[in-house]
Length: 279
Ligand SMILES: *[C@@H]1O[C@H](CO)[C@@H](O)[C@H](O)[C@H]1NC(C)=O
Ligand SMILES: *[C@@H]1O[C@H](CO)[C@@H](O)[C@H](O)[C@H]1NC(C)=O
Image (tube, rainbow, N blue to C red; front, top):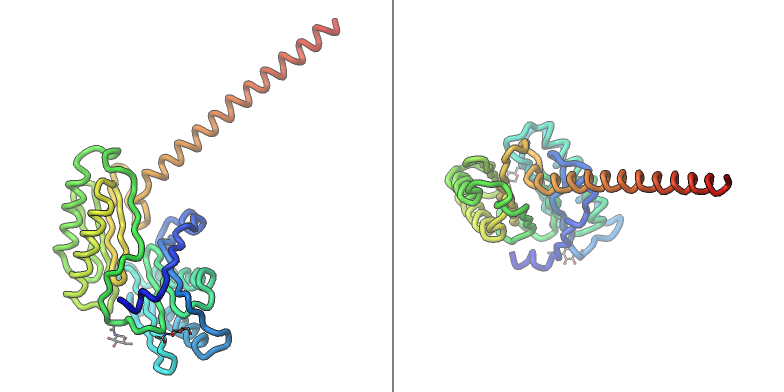
């Protein structure tokens, strides 16, 4: 964990293009690039390229895989949401690799998390080591706007994922749903420990929010209130904000229409007056 502090995580969450363009399995969550870069044409570069290619190829067989290259000290892994079919995993990893090369060109280490998959590589050894470093968090609109005891349901839903086992966990209470995913290099106990930290962090960071998510080094936990919005597997957690966007758009259209009609009336009365002055 202390070694990883040498990596500066540039949170590229300021890239709404990715977030808006795709709200499904391949939706962008966060990415981080190391400051050190590798030299173009180096052995390390070809190790990175071939490891990413080989990771994509394993997605057909498994939702988690790792790759190490002893000659260059490169380690790499991916983790797809482990309940999803291989086709979704492959497509997600492809999208992640193509975004990674755009976001973190020649970075010695990088992490990218899309909604359904994560890729991480580094020249510092990290495979098999628990890591609860906070990498990304986001909270949705206040729960009060949903009605009902959303916070109570949230705590119960998070409780169910904490109590269950497995790398991917899903649970719900009332109309709040929660899910968590560990990276496959953690054993059962390490995964539970990581989920416990993620749950307590999302609970405190998003204390009164109707949706929230916390991504740690080796696991994440998130929850969202459905309340009439269709849940889907995607980032519907922020549908409340999207809904506000829609309201804003509608309002802008109405204001535009009113302004347009007013302009026409002014224009017509001007023509009329001009006409009557001639007479
Ligand atoms: C990782 O690579 C960078 C850039 O080549 C280098 O500065 C750093 O010392 C390397 N770290 C390790 C642990 O090899
Ligand atoms: C890394 O992958 C190998 C197979 O390629 C697997 O046997 C090993 O358990 C994995 N290690 C970890 C820590 O996940």
